[in-house]
Length: 267
Image 1 (spheres, rainbow, N blue to C red):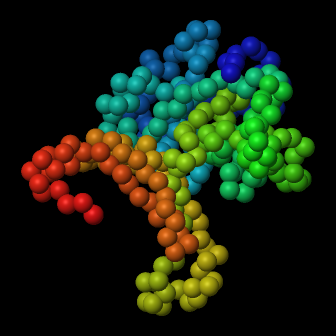
Image 2: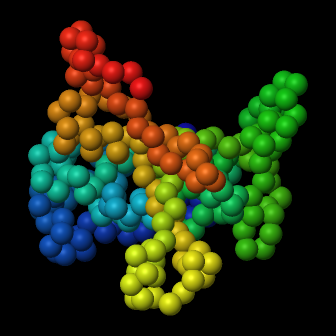
Image 3: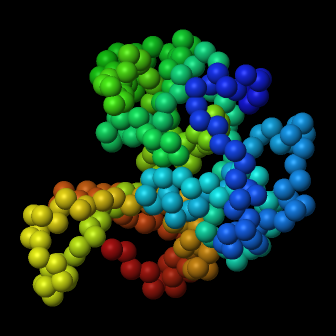
């Protein structure tokens, strides 16, 4: 990856103006910023590798809401009571000049919109031809195709398995695709139907179904912050009755102490 060699207008992406000044007066993120934090020298080498502060809740809808593109020092964010609302993400720089990068919805294989989370796909002349003796896997991973509103693109991409987004031409990685938990939700439930608050049938309700997305690392961090006995863990989905159900595997010293006393029961 490269970070800055000039001529950014030729990258073919949307560049956003600095939003820090406009967001510091909305009352929600005032505690994060002051005049000293916003005094940055564009020629300072320390400012080349950028970071952004994004709204954590926006990731649940597979979108990105950038709160600040010049976030405060890490220590200040951690000490703030609002630190759980925002996530600091560092940039991985710009794509290489001879590479084509696309953010693609991994389920639909359709190009993601602006500031929408998707899987990072890359096309370049220096990419390997694929897996030896595995034509099906090579076709799916090293020769993946995606579409836009005009149809299938005339490009072959490598699927990286990384979820992320682009902002001002730079690449931001949020984590692995396997680490994201998707939950199907409906805006209307059976209780409302029984109470007569809505008149649609269950079949009609399916058109309102939507998904919410959660990241394993964020869930584990939330548990560890609120439950002292939780040290680490992981989340993943299993399919039960045609529906994906999240499962948590947690590490805790409590399990060791219970095993030593004989009170631990294996299920």
